[in-house]
Length: 390
Image (cartoon, rainbow, N blue to C red; front, side, top):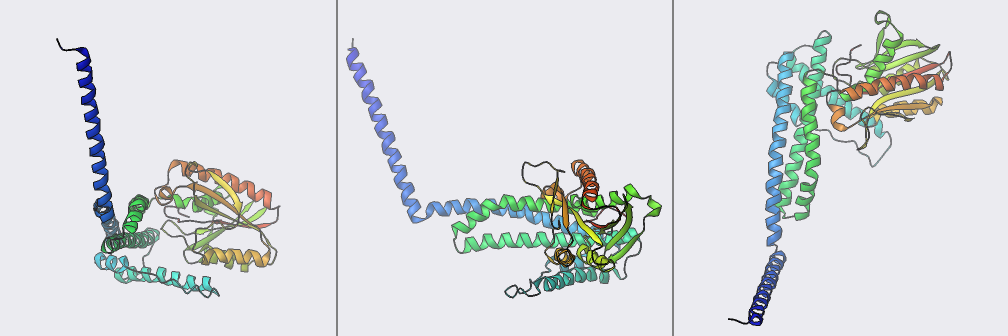
């Protein structure tokens, strides 16, 4: 019979040999990986993996671009354009050159001229293809919605080309850092693209979007104090109207974009022209109501109150109101309705509708707090007025 001591010694020796082999293999693998990393082979493998993942996302993004372009062409056909492919192809690569900013003098006016040229020229492209200016509320709304869809298609096409450019440039120069940054940021860009794709479908159907919260508050304010047959809207700037109402002894001018077509109008120009009709010191306050991007964790439809001009404008429209306020010493108040980027350009949901109701009550409260009977106040419902009629 073998000795128990011998058996125990044999087992211990076998375990020692196994551990030695595991350590040796680990050292060998580490050495090989270190050599591969030094030679750049591991980095090349990682680049190939990231490249394939980015290319897959780009194919999805290209599909989004095609979907939005098809939606815009459908709307153009519905409007009466015979060859929507030509119009879409012409607008898809339209670009805007920013004005010189090294010399800040009068930069907002120059930017305004560039932006208005873009807006007017794209509308002109559609009008030339259409053959005549649209007539009636419904046809005008379709025209405005089609122009907005073309703008979305243009933005998505630019995003796709930019991301493709960064990928190809990173691969061409073997710049691992550039490809890594693109790979890390791509989920964020895809989130934006998906939101635009969803917005295109909403706009093509003429449904109100989250950004219409400001004009909807203005609409509800007018309807809450005046019967429908008593409301008279006057056009004061391109695609922009105002109504005059009496509220608790105050004269209130309510400014908003003309609906129900997709447009933000020119609220700054409208307020400026409206102020020209009123004497110095007559305006007690200017209150703007607009949708605002929420922080993650904030509730959709939450209301925030502040000072200044609540307006997501590149500058020209917003600065008109600010300069007017400075010249005449007018207080500027703002009410924001919180929502995410996807909710702002997507179909308006019930939480935003509740936010509109809350903003209306806060607006009425603010009117009472910032003025007295006999005063004049200007209310501006800022935002895209698609789906919100007069």
